Image 1 (cartoon, rainbow, N blue to C red):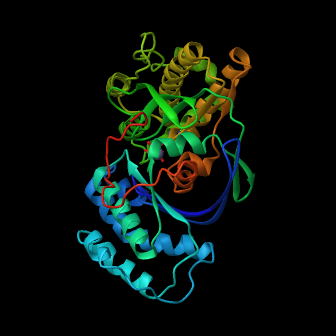
Image 2: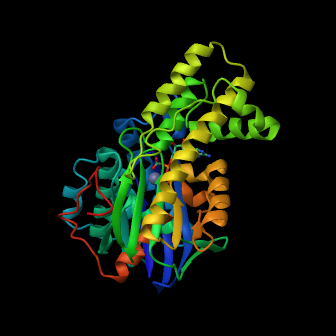
Image 3: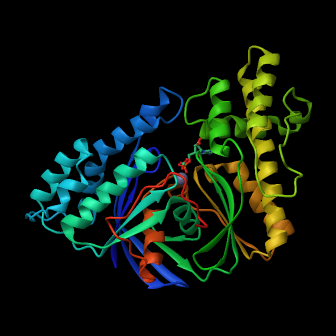
Length: 394
Ligand code: KG4
Ligand code: ZN
């Protein structure tokens, strides 16, 4: 089955074409074409993502990314198709997108695709809507069925995959239940999949997402957006240079909010505020101070994430643990999780996605879409909605 996948929930405009085969237990996904445009440069200036700006950037880049993905899959054949009447009403409010899309559709034949998968939530609602309307318009133009994908499910399932070759991902025999720790700029949650594609939300952040905390702390330290990779670099430098000193540093006493509580919820705003005060009290920060602070912050975050995850492993007897979302690219988190799993949970399989799949992309949306296509979970274009607060257990 050949799937077109579309992702616009936050600050990546992503379109992919996948050739999917097999079933649950042995599925493979060949990436035929992949276009990702990151809005990082745009949002850097403001230190964060603004929904209206993100929406505009998606509208501008969706067609070029579609062209790139179809081109990569050799599906951009010259030709033309007659656009159905419904097309105009679907793109009515998407002026910026509509003209580019009409031009593309009017000069190319119908590609050899079987379905379209699109992220319908959670995320920034205006950004999600552009992607949803884009998918609906393509579905009408090419007469293809639609699949609505939860962005978090994309992270969860893609994390279970292994890269077979440069362009093929396989998902084979995953021992259930699977516990997922999804950590990104927008989300921090622990989800449990007891049965295939059925989720239970165990806990989530009550305030800042962990990636957001990384971004805000980086900003306080004068480091550019997105802050996660910056903090990570500083912390690694410090670990390599003299990690034992951390206990003596000014920043060692950072709190671990909610670490000992019974539930699986997280809170990172107190930690962020503690960093703010520590920086204020300390005054001018040298590069070494920044390294120390980054390290202390990363240690506190890792400690909280691991403690809550271990508690959930104990309670659920999960056999697989998967990490997902941009923050799972963090080296320290990956290292600590790997070491602790080997030491304390040798029977649990740990999956950490490859770098390209940790951050937002359309391939993961195609992967989740395919598993739903196997169940014929197609949705009606007229009633498909973007939902910024879509839950994985809804
Ligand atoms: O999954 P993602 O690309 O987008 C969202 O859905 O939010 O995650 C982006 C987040 C940003 O907050 C970024 O700072 C963080 O992931 N991030 C990292 C690292 N790389 C990206 N955080 C910590 N360490 C990293 N190496
Ligand atoms: Zn994400």
